[in-house]
Length: 338
Image (cartoon, rainbow, N blue to C red; front, side, top):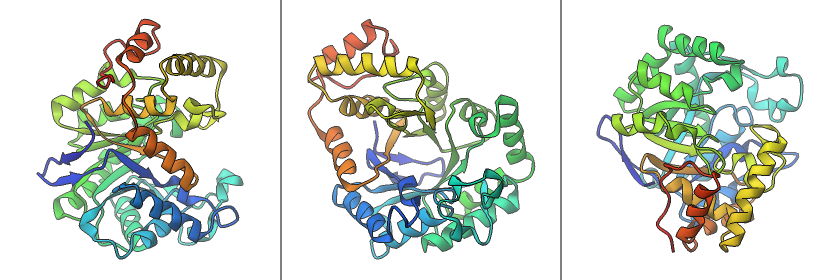
């Protein structure tokens, strides 16, 4: 169940079940002001959220700067913060908020999984955040969805392992500059590969263990349980597709996904449960899950997500029907029913 997690070095990270996914703070000033971003973090804090995740890639430094500013003055021991390495921002990247709307060739970063690249990226993050340490550090996107297939993912993982990148994050863990290390990806396979090659504490796995799909149950989650490795689940609503949004994995949702969502939603409605509540409570039922990151574009959306998670438990019959209809993995742990 989500909550406190003890790292391999014996350091306790007091995760809250619901965490704040900081990608939404990387929105350019034309559509979100710094004050809007601060209000979003303030809302999360007031709701009891104490785990905050960000990355240099989100707004090319903007999300880290906004999150760091919003957390200034709060006792450092009262929250858990994670960021990422692997994309090294160019020196002028802060001026490029919104650059993803343009030509990818002009995006102001390089993939760099080397020792020097990891250390430089981490140092840049600390400056933007205004901190001297972070609690968890994930190597960002060593996966095929980003780099172009399984072979490309393996090449990035080998780069990480052979050019000193993993040694860098391990040194940061040993020094106390970070408490936990791992990878943050959109596929479960790179996590399984890193279990073979290294000694991670945590994986941030986005979109692959949700009410819509549960393939990690077959191999990854049992291996993580055996090794004492925790999972932070991102993309809990599959980029919004589980609540009627148009996207799935950053692209228009295919008909098969829409049909499956509609079938799951019909079962949830029949049992008087909002699908967002079922989605969040389902994820939290697995013992390897330590936190769930929910993105929110505005305070109202954040309140809705936290309220759904904290609301009444769905009836046991809901989970039974989802499994009977083959809409849920038969071996998936489910919450205790109302």
